[in-house]
Structure formats: structure tokens, C-alpha cells
Image (cartoon, rainbow, N blue to C red; front, side, top):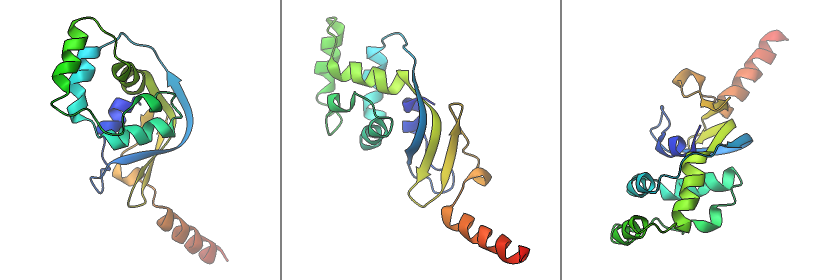
Length: 148
């Protein structure tokens, strides 16, 4: 799962953003540099979620991301730099994070406790696949009691 995909996902149960946790595998798959696409994506990104995801996958691009997304008034200057052929560190970092970083194994966590498994790069977001740790513990206790 690309971090671009992750940034656009929400919990199917609570409609909240999902945090990446317990990452077991990440692949970096280089793709063609796409600065214009990245510029168009900046206003759509959940910036704090992107920064948190970069930390979760232990990316070396975290330091290249500003604390806040570029404001709409800053975008024309970035576009002009791209048009003139300049390579911008911000766009290089976004390229690496959004398009080239693939989470192969791990979990997506909702702030309400559910988590969804990422296996072979595919997040299982079916509502019945959600695992709630408190429900799991109570189900295990019920099974133990019944089995006694």
C-alpha cells in the first residue's frame, strides 16, 4: 500500500483517519518523478497524518517535510520553480513518501481501537475484519470460561 493511498483512507466504521502501526515490511519502489502531480496533491493531503506515517515507516524523508503543508499562497512559487526545471527537496520527499514507499506488512489503527491488517501490501478494510482489542480479550475470556 502506497502512503498516498494510506493518506486518503478512512476507517470504514468510524470515518476517521487511520494511523500506520506495527510495520513489519516496507518496500521502496522507484517510479518516474512526477512533480506536477505532487503539487496538485498537496492541498488534498492530511499533512499531520503524512508526517506520522513517515515516522511509522522510519523514512529518512521526515526531516524534509515542514511541520505544516505549504499554504495555497505558496503553491504558485513552487509551480514556477517546477516549470523552470528546478528539483525541490520538498517534492523529492513527497515523491519518495507518497509514490515510492509501499507498506507491505503492518496494521492500520483507528483512534477508536479497531485495527486492520496490512498483508502483502493490501489493507483489509472490511468492517467484519476489524479487530477491536477489548472485544478480542472479552471473547477470549468467554471461550476460556466455556471450555472449563
